[in-house]
Image (cartoon, rainbow over the protein chains, first blue to last red):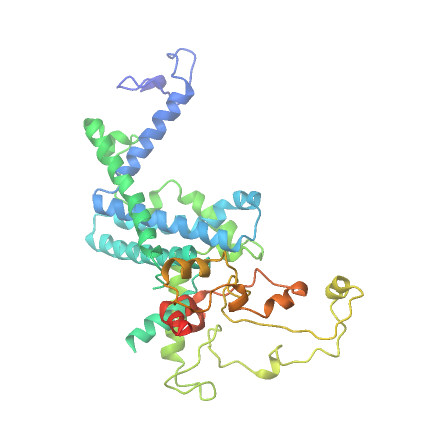
Length: 153
Length: 244
């Protein structure tokens, strides 16, 4: 791997030099790196069901946050783009923790993360359905009081 | 929980499709590049053997920690609550309700019975409420009008001011809008009574039209639907009672 030539003939060097072969165009290196990262991500969770569950949860969390921002819309488009990392930070941390649990070799963490994922998907579906039908935000405190507590009463 | 029409199922279907896309992509890549698919070979720039899954070995953790510090120390802004995530909202709401329900149920002698305590937005429920401090009951006649309203009204003279507060009422139902969601729901899902009163803005909200010429409407003041049962106006049993 000296000088950027891999054992398998990879022409994407990690560092360029004078006497090294001409590397591939940058866009091909980027394309190859993106493809490799996508492959790593797709195989980061062994179980296909957990992979499906994780991606569904990611879609649910991102959709929930987009709808949340759309409902309140306190910022301009530029402001949302500028503050996007902060707005999505806790969702991303949530996904990182869930991914760690679902890809764990311990069944306890798998099951626990799976249950949390299912709950998040259900909650996000309820939030989204209310947005679609009523263009309103779901108040979780009131929903728990009215629905859950009355159900067990 | 708040299932409305087919929205819940449709949202779940979209999430399931998003998850299935990843599974199908993995199966497709495996069928096409099967022999190249293994974790050790797929590490693009990292040749070290893969360690046991640990959250602190994820490369983005440092970036996340930095963003976390930035987010926590952000100054107070109206949009700051948008940074909370769904799991936090649900856990916070559930824990608050449970605490109010099971820990404070026996210490609320003046605000509801011990069996049915009154809930409030405050973590301590309604225990700290005092009408003397409620701005709704404190007169402000001894103060000058707000400069914003003084400037906005100009030389206008008022003889009567009618302040209509509709709790948990959809914006498109008062005044009734014939292109609103409620009207669409009625037209699409309800069978009109033969010889009955037609459903339009002149029959549902007949008097508001005469006031609308000088009406100020706050379109951004909306409440969530689960607040009261009045919001079940769009449900079928209520409409059947109206038509009878």
